[in-house]
Amino acid sequence: MAINPDHSLPNKFCLYIGDTGSGKSQALKQLGKIPGRGVRCLLWDPGQDHKAQRCDSLSQYRRLLIAGLRRGGGFRLALTLPGRQQTPANHEAWCAIVYEALNGKHLTYVVDEELSATSRSPAKADPSLNLLLNQGRKFGLVYHGTIQYPQELPKTVYRACQTLFVGIQDVEAVRYVAKRLDVEPSKIAGLKPLQFIKSAKGEPQKTMQMKYKKL
Image (cartoon, rainbow, N blue to C red):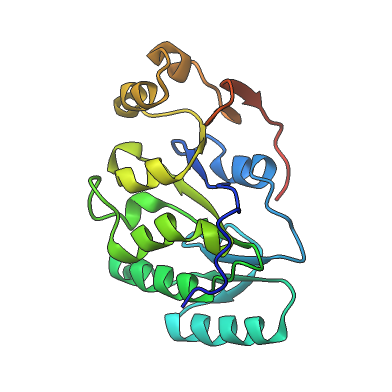
């Protein structure tokens, strides 16, 4: 289980919301400030969008994670299950594995891609994801989640992530996201690819324009 709680650790959880082509992967890597080396980074990566040591089963993932923790130092470990196995149940199992690895003496960066495919209900996150989001901060968790269809995201995730990066949305999502950010729908509808509104607790909202970078 997670060890060494440190209640002084800040909430650095980020959520990236955007339709296909919005540039979510670019935003995560350019704006999320996840160090490229020397840190613990655990990924749910169905689309193989990240460079990491890759696993195709939960058992392999757990085994390699345990080995990495024993070695100490940094590592990047991604789980990419075969398509039909990318289920909410397996995502829950992955969340449980991640939670067990947390240690308040070491930051653990977690990238949780395409949450709409692993969310069963927009009302509340499943138990292991809920535990990860509600208890992980004090154990060094730095969570980064991405989603294409914000209406399908559990409210637990919205509450836990104090920084949102919002890119272009499909027509159905514009009003939903605008209400959540408390901005005019036209501001969301006017976004262009690689352009994101940053909304962070305690900070003024700002629009950020990125340039495409080879990742």
